Amino acid sequence: MKVYVSDTMQQAYHYELVEPMGENFDVNFAPELTPKQMLELGVFGGKYMTDCQQEFPVNWFENAKLSPNQYDPSLNYFEVRASQSLAVWRKKGWIYEDDPRGWFQWYCRYFMGRRLGAEDERQIKRWRAMTRHIAQIKKNCQPADILCRRKQRQALLHWAYDSRMM
Image (cartoon, rainbow, N blue to C red; front, side):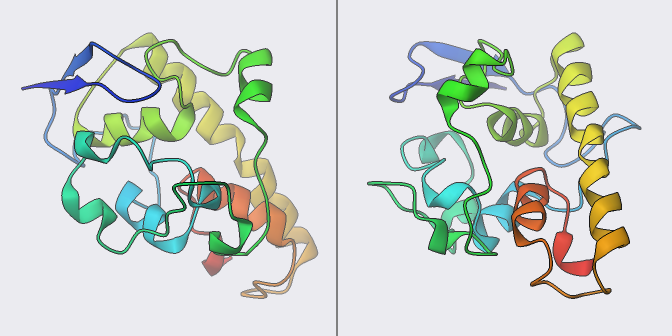
């Protein structure tokens, strides 16, 4: 099945879904949260997915915390800003041309069933690198103290790690 995309950041783009939704992930990639769960918990200040909802399942957005006009850290689960701007992402070379919104867009499309070989490997490697934040939380916080290191916990939510349980 082909998915056609036309939003403010991407026009006349399409990709093919080659795997069933939410299945057949790389053995090195085991996200703890689905895109739907992430959107419901509150990620990226609610701003991330406000103009591209037609690309994804309607139910992902039924209880999503979104802010169409501006980034709102109060919508994040931990109510803190925990991400850098898209301009910084671009400058650091973290953006792949087919996913101009970054890692979460890649993850949503991967979850839907798109596979891109080398790009998937690169993004999974970046996802795995986030475990350094898990180690810091475990070292410096009491178990389930969700007020400890809120910025790191929010960043982990942005990467599909359920930091509420650490």
